Length: 237
Image: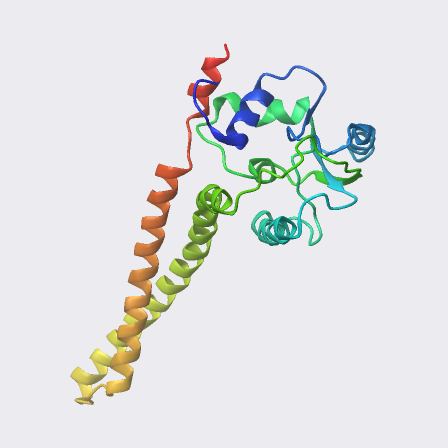
């Protein structure tokens, strides 16, 4: 690769060039014991899954990284709507049929966890862990924060989308009530109470802020986390 495109995109490029019936991915520190490949292979065959994710039987990271990993896992479970106790790792096995259906080489960009967005036919398989090749972990807190920003923005965007929809609904209701009060004022001369005016104005502001915030984060995600995979794939042809 002529440029650093990150693990997710680089892995996607590698998967797009695979030709075997099953494709295995793993991290470069080899903390996942390759003896467990048989477990992944037997699980993907028996469950007829599109891909299977290894679930380490024991932690091999430090306490701080383990806490960070668990926090990310809980967020990912909610984001990708996986089973509550689903485990995530780079130790995965994919079927060629699934990769072919995904049309990786034709995608404009990839997001973390792209495979969970394309299918719900996946499962976990228990795998063994071992001491990695590096004596010290290359884990860096600030690097984690920096690399997680696109992911966090994506989560925020999803939440703001919900907020925007809710705010829009409340704003529509407030507009209807304002219209009703206006007709009442014209027809009967009744003055709109002060607290009601404040309430309706707050709903209107909430709707506007929700829509604006969603738009800003949407543009931010598009500029920072999307990468043209088709251009990167061309490098390896």
